[in-house]
Length: 319
Image 1 (cartoon, rainbow, N blue to C red):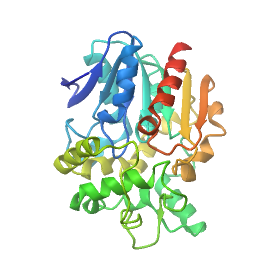
Image 2: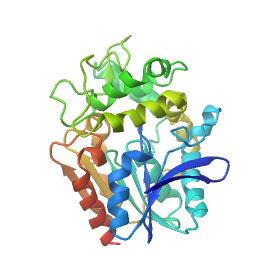
Image 3: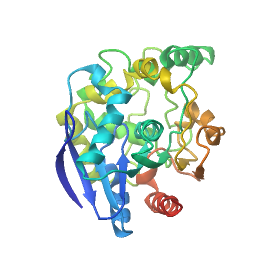
Image 4: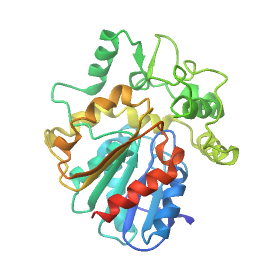
């Protein structure tokens, strides 16, 4: 397993890679890094695949453009298309977790010639909503349900990243704890907060590291986010409405490549994205794997690496 820099179209990407054979691209989410996939990189390499896990645009050792609009979905998909080319390949299987899942789904939706199959973890494919931009709809649903303020709406503000930047270690510890499957009922985050209460303030101060997260591994995250900050990662969220505006041409489009979806039974993201699980096959007709892992939370590939590796290798074997 090695770390190196790859020059792609407009940015330099830091990647973790191992193995040789058919390429499998692993896309992380928030607040994670390429090292979130270490167990999968190892397992894929051992099974005869070339596994590559980049630090995504704005994260870790990869470049962080200044412009907010540089973090839109079309940019993120473009980064992955050009990474495949820069690696000397013409096609791959793409796997995404959390924010990386929408990127992976859109890779397959936009460039099925490059991304010949797709697997999403935690976040199912969510088709474009024709009635208007997503942030307004999310705010209405939260208010109508008396749920408080949704974190994605809170992240739209220009200063939303400052609470994370002020104490990266505490912010990361609380986020990993609040979305983990081992965290007791009632102490997980639902993604909704009382008005005037920040996301980190809504999570218990005595939050500890999840069972899968060693101090050494945690320090990798703390060092990376202390160095790079949270402004760029939150800019991904600040492009939600812009993504909607730029993808009208994808309205009602379906993913035609083979697909797979895996989610943890206790993943809090299911509070607001889980409704899309039931109809997933309507949008991914060749859905070959759809599994709910009992007791697992959001950090699926790190919480349950053996189960995720087994399901991933099974899916790859169907191609």
